Image 1 (cartoon, one colour):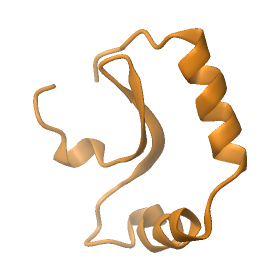
Image 2: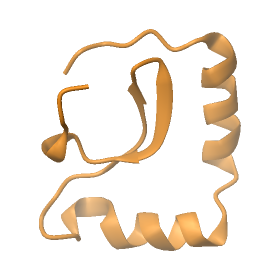
Image 3: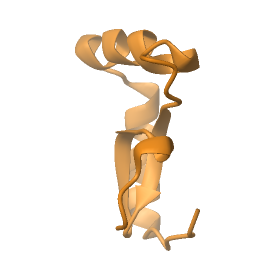
Length: 64
C-alpha cells in the first residue's frame, strides 16, 4: 500500500474525530469491523491521496 503524506492539520482533525464518533458512525463501524461484512476488512481513518477517509476497505481499493 502506498504511503501518502497527510498534512498535520488533517491528522489533528482525524484524531479528534476518532475520539468523537457519531451514533451512525459507531453503528456502521460495529457492523463492518472484524470482517463482519462479507469477510471484508475495513479500516478507520485511512490516508488516501493526502486526505483521511473515515472508513476504507483496502481489499476493494481502486487505483487512486
